[in-house]
Length: 421
Ligand code: PLP
Image 1 (cartoon, rainbow, N blue to C red):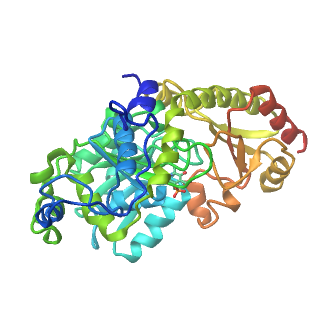
Image 2 (image 1 turned 90 degrees about the vertical axis):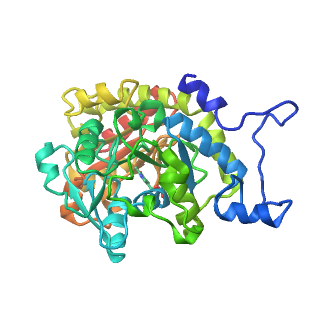
Image 3 (image 1 turned 180 degrees about the vertical axis):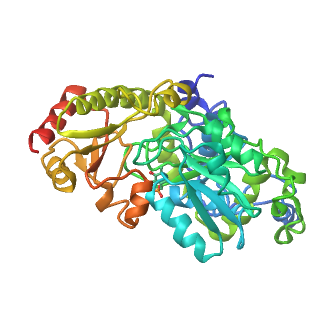
């Protein structure tokens, strides 16, 4: 099936006489015929739901859909994108371990990796994703367990060379984790380029309507966890009576461990109603992405033509350093998110933003409605000046998330902003 069809038909598949709409199984618990069966569930020797902190049929339908969209063996929904990134890393890193991440990733993820995980004894080294392989290699250590990057970085709109990152990760015997939030599987499927794990903030395009925070971890099933670096996946887990994930679950070892061990213990699993709402967003994802891309391309060109604009970060703009990577990884478009800097710095950025009437000034991005944000004073406020530069954020940088409105109305609003400078 094409991805447009998968968005509608993967996941819940109604049978004869079933409800057409995906049912909401609003229940914390499940009933069984025997104590023996419950025992088997707790030994992971039979499939089934135990408790809605670990799995739920409605959430499960959406996990199946997202796994299919990304081309993975399984997915695990979480209550936020942050929770997804956290789980993806914690599933393979423990105290004393280290991992490497691109410096351009979302500011909240930088904080999670650099500050919070450090308190738990897990260290992260940030690298320039555009550097050559030898340079990035220098960040790796014997205790390095993963490499992490974003397909389209928020808000630098840098396009990740996924194949290069996968090569480096695999040379070091570790998986590549890719945050595919902005691209969505409609524009790029990182597993096809060698990524091993994908995470999303479903809060963004997947939901699309700014109604719900959520996340998901997807497993490609392709990484060999038995290479000696990941004992937790291929040695008996005492908390499940000695289950060995790689032996019992094969290609689904990583995603099964994330669910039955980490999700059981951390409990950041979404409720059924959240999955129902997310599914509504997913059904129209492919159609929306097409329009977001076409609108954003025109807005980016319009901004690039203004003498009040210092630079525009969008891979289709003339002279973009990411043109070749966009052609390779994002042939259908580069999402609706643009960032640009006005020549007058912070003050002019604020003037631009405050004179818009259509675009919402919100702490949100990748929405059906056009919205705008000044990262240096909001989402990336906690970053040091050094981290801001590494993340490609100048004082005058504005993130403009182009929505689905008519292009003429969006351009008129952007013109109003530029005229105010
Ligand atoms: N990844 C990216 C690329 C993001 O932009 C965000 C949030 O803006 C996150 C992860 C975190 O997601 P959430 O806000 O759903 O926790």
